[in-house]
Length: 195
Ligand code: SF4
Image (tube, rainbow, N blue to C red):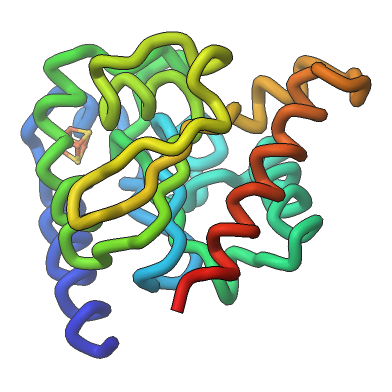
């Protein structure tokens, strides 16, 4: 565990100094990770937004609070059970989607995080993360809730981004929130089977 922490810290230190793409010029903070390093459950999000950039933490603000509530519904918490990181470590201006060259430049850091942790479950949160981790798949609505095989035997599931759920208030059967509930229950089922 100590080695895992040290290796992740090495990558974080490299990100702090990184100037591989132009996002280094506009960032306030790099947004490296939150939660607990572990080899069971990792969530990969998209790119930092305004508050993430200000605080240096992924999934803060309303979307982060909703994500925490979703995990809490199945007895999981980011403090004890989940490691959270992003596809891109610096905020794209005006919250635009990251450019292909920015994703390409930053990819080595995400790959390094996943290689160190070797998580058994990876949640791919939102369409930007989907495009990075499963480039042959498209349409988060089409693929959410399905399991895909990842590196090191990881089981990967795309899920809706909480900011999308915030824009869709219905909880009726078939709504995005209802679908998310089905997905997180399935994630917990597989999580509980892990040794
Ligand atoms: S987004 Fe990634 S590659 Fe670009 S400057 Fe930030 S850490 Fe470096």
